[in-house]
Length: 383
Image (cartoon, rainbow, N blue to C red; front, side):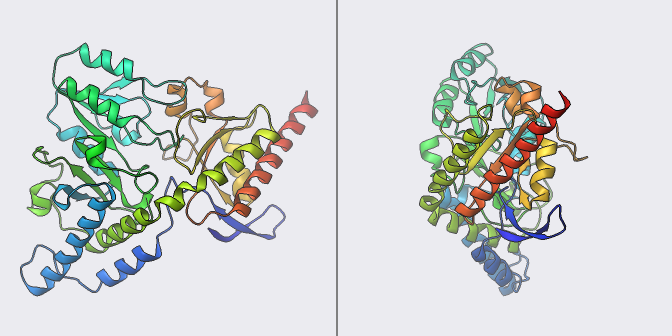
């Protein structure tokens, strides 16, 4: 995604956006749907004509989002984002204990106390460890395992997790925010009881998400007060945002095949980096990954230094984790995979999207080599 950014010599460089896992550009279809929805200002809970028109937009989007994950419209609860959906599950499942993979998003790990399920060095949940944890305590459990890790892109064996969990009477929640629109998803095939989604991870607006709930499963609402969303989430629906979510979901479903093609660009990038620095490393490379994500270690160069170098070159990427102050901290995901703190602190994430071109990937690789070479030269001169 091109724009302009200042470079070190004061000239203007073409800006490149390669941080799609953080948030995506708004799709044209989503923007058009949102603009059209803004003309329908009725409250979707009102019974008059204005309200009914707004309600139709919400229900159309509900059908579109449901289709993306092979669910029915009645199973979709609109929320203010995946974080709210995750919190609704973690705080409202009614289960006495929670088991969450050690690589879950902070919105899951921070929602309450949970036993952490270890992962392998490749970043895949350890199914044998999960089986042992389930067998060790007979209390009703909730297991929370993401479909795709946001930092490494590693795809998790959700169906196998569900089989183990259901055998023990546990419910399974799956945060699919990083999977929807990247790989085919089916509520029936996964077997998960609850799935969280986020609009802005697939080309929709920020501040809108959904919780998909298996038929017959009670959900204790996080937000109470009104009867919206079949009394499962109070508050007047964000009609324009929901309309944008629906349009983005439809576009993402139509673009699944094209998204898979990004693996060619990702592999091209990783090959160039490997040739430039044999000491580099791609976390999760040996596991199945979504097509767009590379979690790359630059030996001897901190993520903060890398981010500044990329930003000066007009390239947007991200570190694995950052706190509100902006200070880059070691990724809990990489630490759970067995990386050292030093290795985690030298790693950045590159995430491609539907606007990414080969020229952009080559430019990133060239800048990566420049940053690495500068750091290597400095280290040699100070030795």
